[in-house]
Length: 250
Ligand SMILES: *[C@@H]1O[C@H](CO)[C@@H](O)[C@H](O)[C@H]1NC(C)=O
Figure 1 (tube, rainbow, N blue to C red):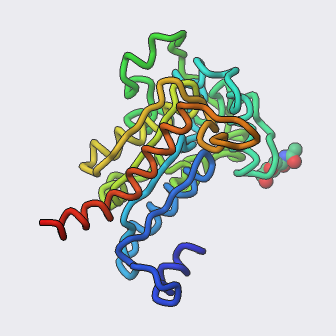
Figure 2: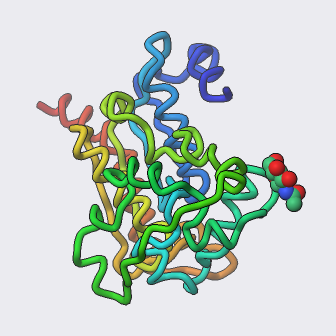
């Protein structure tokens, strides 16, 4: 609602309607992706120039994807916490956390239906060499599914949006970290965008962990990988201006 209000009243803010970019990290990356999808379908509003998704959380169907297994105990975001937060976001409580973690919160037929988008098969092999074990699909009871079925709505899990929406998305920048449970959410969304012909710039921090960008020069913390990630993000942000000045110099 805030973004739609902003876009409708853009002159009031003296902002160039052709140069609006949404950006967010972690849960904010989820919001930014959902906002981009909502605006993609609105012909009455200016198109976004781009979306920047920094280690976004984009799905809640599978907390046993390779990155969730590999980085289950890596700070700052433990696997159990990721499921806890997303349940709090959904329901305001963390009931059925155990089922969500083991994967018995969504019926098998629905999981199979989304397997084309949410599956370890869509994660490149090189990301699976580090301690990953394939798991059998579990079924779930209707009672549990009732409490979490909104996980299948793209507004909550943008990875599940239809191709027709993904195709209309603006240019994207996605940052992922190797030591992050949410790494595979980013990788899967990158694949969806690419499969639908959307333009994606992907930057992967081989030595990064979840939250590293916000720890840049915060309380004395400074990680070279975080600085690199931030620099890349800024470089992407500044690119349209660079292209413009390039035009003028010609
Ligand atoms: C958690 O939230 C759901 C959805 O609002 C509700 O059905 C359920 O009763 C709640 N559980 C607890 C323990 O409060």
